[in-house]
Amino acid sequence: MVSRIRSFATYGIEALEVKVEVDAGRGLPGTVIVGLPDSAVKESKERVRSAIVNSGYPFPAKKIVVNLAPADLKKEGTLYDLPIALGILASTGLVREDTVSNYLVAGELGLGGEVNPVKGILPAAFLAKELGLEGIVVPLKNAEEALLVGGIKVYPVKSLVEAVAFFNGDLRIEPATPERVADAADYDVDLSDIVGQYQAKRALEIAAAGRHNLFMVGPPGSGKTMLARRLPTIMPPMTEEEVIETSKVYSVAGLFNEVPVTRRPFRSPHSTASDVSLIGGGANVRPGEVSLAHNGVLFLDELPEFKRSVLEALRQPLEDRKVTISRASGTYTFPADFSLICAANPCPCGYYGFSDGVHYCSCSPYQIKRYMGKISGPILDRIDIYVSVPAVKPEELKKGSGGESSEKVRGRVIKAHEIQKRRFRERKINFNAQMGRREIKEFCKLSKEAEEALTKAVKAFGLSARAYDRVLKLSRTIADLDGSDVIDVAHVAEAISYRSTIPV
Image 1: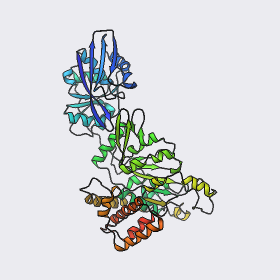
Image 2 (image 1 turned 30 degrees about the vertical axis):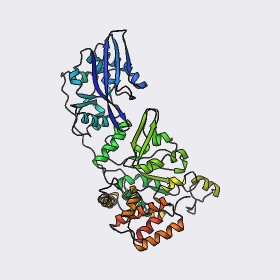
Image 3 (image 1 turned 60 degrees about the vertical axis):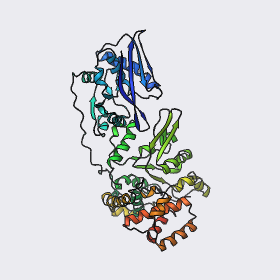
Image 4 (image 1 turned 90 degrees about the vertical axis):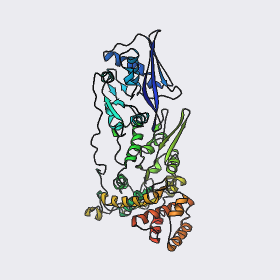
């Protein structure tokens, strides 16, 4: 008798249906798993055997063949433990197959029969809805993320015994209901915590309003990291679509404790991060930091300390807002639409150009050039805003006034976003930073004085074609914050000021 249990496999951030076929027939007792399983899947036969026996069920003394169909799709992880166990029990008549076939099932089994959480449940819930199934049976700790998908019933189970009793009709499990999520606008930090740094705060506001990339340069302790950590607090709350898309990435990455993602992600990888950890990939392909920062902020502190190969790998996601990873097993695509915030000291010692009368730069011109030269021109060209962050003066620290709150600044940013939504309602983009050449030509209308100022700046600073476009995008955002349809000379002048301090 062959039993069939529905499960899934993740491909990027989407789920594909996998049928777990189990045949318990004649032959020498043993279990064989076929269908391109990885090591974790192959080891499941030992976990499944112990879980079945320790749960009080007899393990059949037959030759058991488990086929994961389609057989040409690579299967990874421990999510097939529960389907395989149910399949074995169904093949011996201990589980009603006519019932279990109406559900999508996933879960890792402990040796005692307990069901542990697995990766990718959120995209699996979407798959179950598309297939028109009665529901999805998942580990208890995965139930919250599955509930993000409306229109599908989620049945959490704690053990193999519970799952068997549920499918046999001996146990009634009520579909899970979503828990109350904390207000997404509540943050532990606020922009008003930072004393001084008014130019940097203004740069943060512009970056949030148009989804522009930002580079801060300043001495140690000037507040660069504090500023970066407060960028999510002035960004608009995440939409339902953004919550689901970002949560999918975290679900596939196995970060189910952070699902659902209701606040803008803030990812800050260390400078020793590899290109795989930043971009994604590996033997079992998984999303990297750029994808975990999707719809949020990726903060790279001490940018020159990152390996050059790591920084160069950022080129594609910065332009395409997605990451494509090619392997022999297939091509995987992960979203990577994030705001890049970089920070760096101006030199190895950190005080070049920022002497405060106590600290002086001790670096040679060669050391300074070599230090900042680690960052390539193409990467710098993809950053819209450059701002100096000098040390705060003692007099300002004594005053202790941090200025506007995040809530007040966020209000202006939301208004600017609404303007952009109306502007791009018939386009596939949402923000000024995403504009292409056609959109720039159509929406970045300059006054005569602004055109003259921009022409002079291009000649004076030797701006590239890409830098020229970025100044126009930045000017458009500044004008949106002012509520102006036309880009005036003041908007262009401010935009140019953020391009005149490139640290090279």
